Length: 102
Image 1 (cartoon, one colour):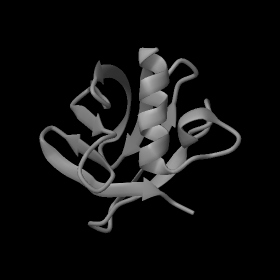
Image 2: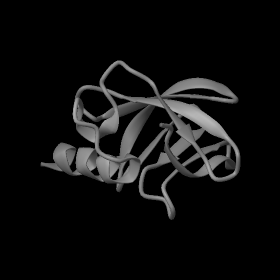
Image 3: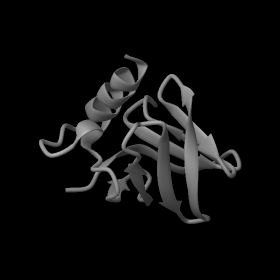
């Protein structure tokens, strides 16, 4: 049930994708464009427990922390941030109000 809620929250944030749950096909990176002219890539795991991100400071596998948040290796991904998805690295914004690029 919890996994389904996470997938639903991510889908609502990024926009639905007919071919995959949460708008992120397992094993396929999606580019997220951010309001502050930044971008990064993310890929959801099959079970929704991890998200792999590729950002300015490298890449990392982030573990689910609850409430739409994933973290690891200095990164914090918030799927429920105001205005869309947000990514931080070592407390500094790497993107705010991010949405899947078309």
